[in-house]
Length: 110
Image (cartoon, rainbow, N blue to C red; front, side):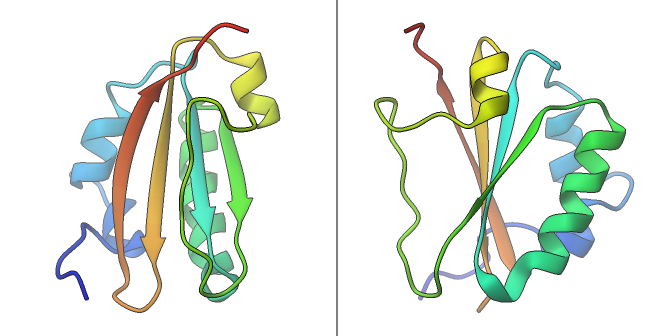
């Protein structure tokens, strides 16, 4: 089990959070992907609402309970990733610990 993977969703959308400081540097040309397990849809909606309020394209990737989180530059793109250029930022939420982490990657032009 990993410890302290980041901020909880409640912490992440509070003014001054590390998450919002990172989001302040992201432009609308960047798609943000939120991966979500079934027990975290409420948290997903709260974070997505904050990202939409900031004008950031946001995609949701629901996962079945226990499925590993993974992605690759060669994987499928969400609709907002297809409409955006530049980078994709993905936020991973671990419901068991209540923590989230961020990973970014360049989106290759197809």
